Structure formats: structure tokens, C-alpha cells
Length: 171
Image 1 (cartoon, rainbow, N blue to C red):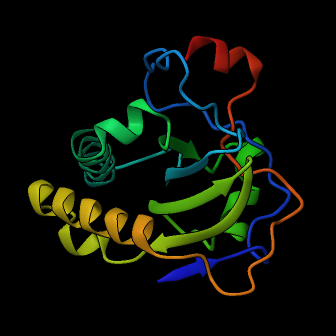
Image 2 (spheres, one colour; image 1 turned 90 degrees about the vertical axis):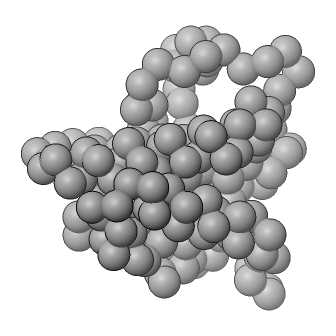
């Protein structure tokens, strides 16, 4: 599994578009970048995608929304699909060691990345949406329950995928 802490992505700016329109966050829900911890679930993909990659994204997204609805509603878990072929997102390939469609969990505190993990094993279940959904839910539960790496310092930059003000007003 690829992992990262403060030495990982540290200067990438938010800006990843949501995979689909999202509902407005409930009143009082923490914004990404507030003092509350937030786990951003990134599904990174290229511009041109096959049916398998599209299916993996759909199964992963569905799993997050079905298994973590209270956390999604409270914005403790946030889904972001990002096309890392776009010029404004190419830096993700190096920062998260991306070569193709990948799932990355990134924990933030006060809008700063404190740790991240590239999920390995998705391709094992690429043609089994139900199994892939269970795998994603299991991996996300494990990630959320795990403590940050010892000695991990808070990075200087913001986590990639933070919506800009215009996008935030749509949420």
C-alpha cells in the first residue's frame, strides 16, 4: 500500500471537481478545512477510461455513500473524482504515485493533509462490483480507525481536492 504523511503531498491545492453534483451540506456541518478531521476519498482517473475503470469508480463511490452516509452527511468523509490528465491536476501523479485509476484516502486536520494512503488491491475486484464495494468499505473503515503515523508533522500546504469558494457554495 502506498502511504504518505507530511512528507507526502504538501503543496497541492484543492480544486478537484466532484464526480457528480452534491447536495448542500447540512446546517452546522463542518466545511473541509475547518478544525474537524476530514477524510477525502479520491478516485483518480485519466481522461480516457474503459468500462472497467468507470465501473470501479461507480462501485467505489456507491460503497462510500452507502456505508458512510452519516460521515458523508457530516462532511467527515468527502468523495472526489479527479482526472489527473488535466493540466491543473497532473501534479497528483507524482504526489500520490499514480499510473492509472487509483483510490487514495487522505486525512486532513484543519485543511492540512496529515496522512494518506493509496489503496492497493482494487484491480483484484475490478469485475466484481459487489466485492469491490465491500473491499472499499473495509479499507476505508481500517484507514479511519488507524492512528496517524508517529511523528507525522502537519504539512505546509492544503490537501488537493478542496473546493474553491464557487464550488463550496454549491455544496
